[in-house]
Amino acid sequence: MKKKLLIIGASGHGKVVADLALKMNKWQSIAFLDDDESIEMSIGIKVIGKSCEAYNLLNDYDIFVAIGDNSIRKRIQNELEEEGASIPTLIHPNVVLGEKVDVASGTVIMAGVVINCCTKIGKGCIINTGSTVDHDNLIEEFVHISPGAHLAGMVRVGQKSWLGIGSVVSNNVTITSSCKIGAGAVVVRDITETGTYIGVPVRKVN
Image 1 (spheres, rainbow, N blue to C red):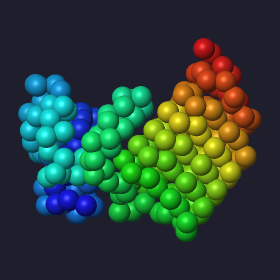
Image 2 (cartoon, rainbow, N blue to C red):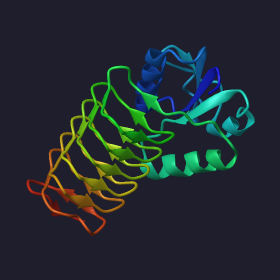
Image 3 (cartoon, rainbow, N blue to C red):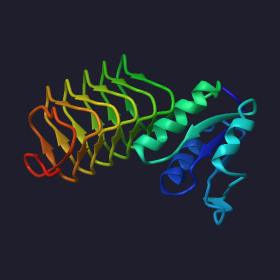
């Protein structure tokens, strides 16, 4: 762990990530990188360059990719890892973590989240505000679980899937990779085909 933190992405998701990092109180300084040159500062934190400049700063900073798009976040984090970047895990101070919960690098767990025992969360995930992940879940890499989503026990979510705000996943359900689950949707059986699903219970729309 280094003394300074560099966050790639200074817009909506990046702001929340930075706010969380400040509350963790682990870094002496925090800065942003963003490709939008019109953004010079975000929540009082300076934007010091574009995202490509991260590779020149690997020795000085821990680097966190705060990009909401799962595919883009995956590409950037994997490229940084190949160059030897130090990529932290960010966990809000009021998160509740059960025993034997494993959280990989580049994942952020937002305020109010509860993750129960024996759950594994892969790298580069977003476990967003007020969501709950119950026991023995497997959340694969670069998944986004939106605010207020609730996963029962023994759920598996494939990499790069996105669960919309307020969605619910019943116990013993598997969701395959690269799926989108709509806001308020309810998943009661396995989803084996990539696509977009909405409704109660969910149905595939494309």
